[in-house]
Image (cartoon, rainbow, N blue to C red; front, side):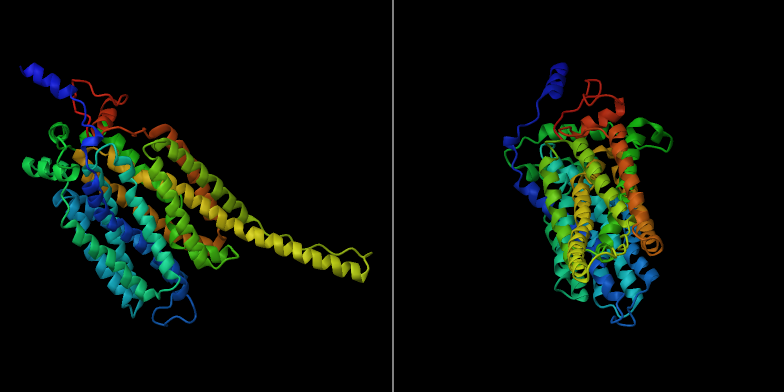
Length: 506
């Protein structure tokens, strides 16, 4: 009898998607990713306001020089690193949902400090606190979404944090065209408060509840997420089996491939993601366009880039479960490489001075040729001034198609359950410490060498991204969390043998 039940347990097929009602799942995901909207909004807050603080017309108490502007741009990343460290503890101590909700506290305080700032320390402290909130949400939201989603939609929903972060960025750029900088800060507090209100009505992760031994509560939450017609037993058994096979790991056990490989892949991906230069480009977008002599006003260029970024992330979300993760990462790496190489060459090129006019021209002929030359030169300069904008748009498009959303998604998919809370916090901490150093150094590099040196570095990193994807990153499309875990356990196969059984329904 036991043998027959074991056979049924291991061979029962996953429930069909027709039995699942995703409407409540989508509502729970929307409630959570409001934190990412706030993250995207606060990340680029410095882009439209820094030119005002560096202007001679700025309030003397708030006026910034190069060093102070570098700190204002980069201290957000330092706060995000601190938030990632905090999430390492909170994710396992209070759970994913409460960790996300607690991020609203530093976020709201930070925005209020910036909105009412009368001294530089208030601006810097407020920016740091919004960074803390961003780091907490970056470490908690992808894990929460991964654990409440089923594999049919995990790829699309896993890209939602990036989509809403981009939408937050675009909202900031759009509001920056018409709203004063103080009211921009006040507006940033609204999504955080809305997020807390909605999440109070959303369920905790069934996977976490099972790990705490709260089976009935987990079953109730899973049924709420999947719909009343969904048979929860198979999925709950699969999750319970995954939890039962986990043990508390020691430092020596981290040498096992099932632990160190997914953690190393996640950490390196987050490091490379930041080394592409995405954070300093977004943080200093308007000042970069001002230095690039783009024909449009920098604030309008920033809004165009934000719109393109939103479109490209939406494209990535639609392709995530069709084209696969690796194909999108290849495309992303190539687009970023080509655009950053173009920006490197443009920033290193200087216009040639006009040569002397021939002596045998008549005065009238010379005058006509001079006018024609001026017109041609104006057309050439106008065309050339659009190349930095087009290249930046392509760079953002490439990043948002692959290395933006997929890095978040893969982190939540490949990290082992027993170390997921701590490891996700570690990934976010490494990511934002890298972003802090890069963003702070970027301003000084540009002032000393121009845009050529940082763009050249970003080009080299894009090549490394291409190689890392080819050699180290597995394809997780249409794989359950248990299958992905088995891949790292065996080092060769997603297929789960009956020696290490699990129902493929996550």
